[in-house]
Image 1 (cartoon, one colour):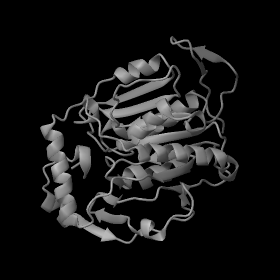
Image 2 (cartoon, rainbow, N blue to C red):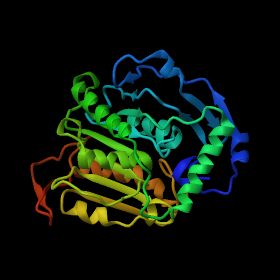
Image 3 (spheres, rainbow, N blue to C red):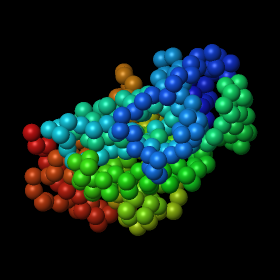
Length: 322
């Protein structure tokens, strides 16, 4: 089973088998957690339900209070850029494993000020059996409606509000985090990738990220502005969800900005930071090289530009400084 709940819950596991694996735990204590909208009501924070599933890591559902969980690098390693990590979970939960903790640790090790965004999700039944029935009914409805590559989950407005607020907060506090306010990116996984693309297309200027990464997110076509920030996209061609959604958005992005697509032959959905022996395990290093190429980290050694076919300019590649 690749995603345990919502869109990609198309596995052979039954609800009862899944429930046997669930172990509810106390909420982790995150040092320096930043609430997006000020000090919250304690009862709303405590409404969250954290749990573990064997060999699949930690999850959280019933998130009412959005927050940023910072992973800040040592000052000597800082590269001046920030990454907001938006986990997947189809807006029903957050997958805090490879697309959460592991991603944050990796980006911190590379000198980024990394922040996991714990955005608001749909409020669901608290009892496990009722929750599993709720999810099963939702999945049945998706299948009855003809789940296809062009399907995208209905994204709550509050999730979009949270990603925009996260970018704005980090930009306003750039000095506190030792970053540059024009080097803030979003790396979104699955549902989080939909949020990243939305931010690039629709967010007000003060809330818009300077670059985004869509990691196994559906590339669903919709109205776009004339200019878009750079986008890196990665997915597996055998992904039963995102890999079948087509690439119209990539072609449209080419006319409006810088875009790079990595389509891996195998690996399915929900591969997080990559699953060996699949080649999708290469995407973090390739993303890092791409960021260097476009000048977001390790600024180019000169001001030379490459004129793209769409008429936009891109900094000429330079090897990273030591």
